[in-house]
Length: 141
Image 1: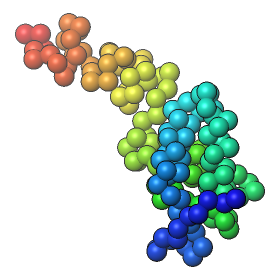
Image 2: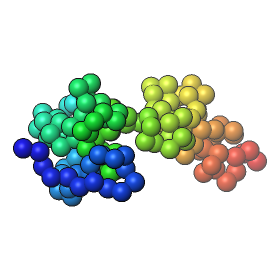
Image 3: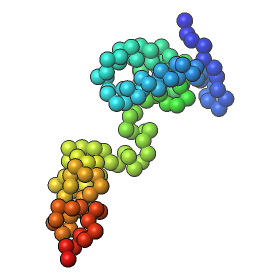
Image 4: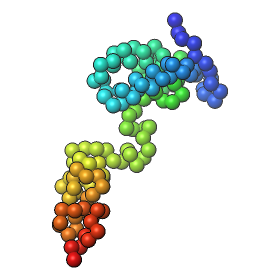
């Protein structure tokens, strides 16, 4: 049996919005998948639940196919479309992707960063081991 969902004004005609409890569970499943990919103990349970409440298309994407159900907050789309770190982050976060080349995610690659593990510091102009942002005397005079 399909759970009862309500239609929301402003959504495409026929698009449904899930109830509060399913909405909460969908958000938690989407959060867990965002944080752990498929590597969390309840992934199989979440996948079965999300398939049941979101009704993704045959392609297992939330892309407007008939019968899809929305959480109203993007949880179904996030879970099935794997959009974590892509469409749902602000532009400034998209540009700063943490990689091995930039361990502290400050936008300066490790080989050019005097403090590759400190996101608040990137330069040590006077070479005293204190970053320019924290060093009140960065010219060592």
